Image 1 (cartoon, one colour):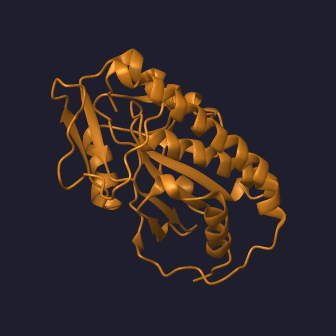
Image 2 (cartoon, helix red, strand yellow):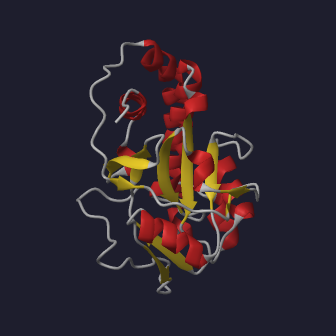
Length: 248
């Protein structure tokens, strides 16, 4: 999200924090993965994830929902020019991926993000965003998907029921979110360095819900987290184990 130049100091501090989160999550990954993970019961099916074809990933490769079947999907929604929640979510998911590699589950899980700015960004910006936060665009276990604005809206809002909105900069450097999408709670939004956004100097923001979902290998949504930036690696790992252990 766009910010005034005076916020750059805070951006760098939060950028360092985001990188530290990745390092700590990777270091803790082995312990979490090799510790006892309570199997528990998989959560109930909430709804079917949307079916699609013709979306493209960060490398320009076409991807369909059929290709994702058979794996647990960790689904989120990201704006490449964001410098609040999206970089934090990306950094956490890098740590989660490191954990999966340590536990041998990497081939059974796919991290799937949807670009909520399909009209203003594309694979080039998506690759740049991923690299900034330690996400290798060539990693086959990550799919950052986009398409036409109509395609993305149908999948994200029509299928996952996640809303997003383009908001023009008011001229003060701060774009105002609509009340429906405003973040609730007393904690201020984090400010994280995003050189891609600094270079682009866009005059708009994309406000969207800070949501993460877990989709089972049959393509059914089993869990919704309403604060994606606060979901820990241990919680996600336990959820993956529960979903993989379910045959319902």
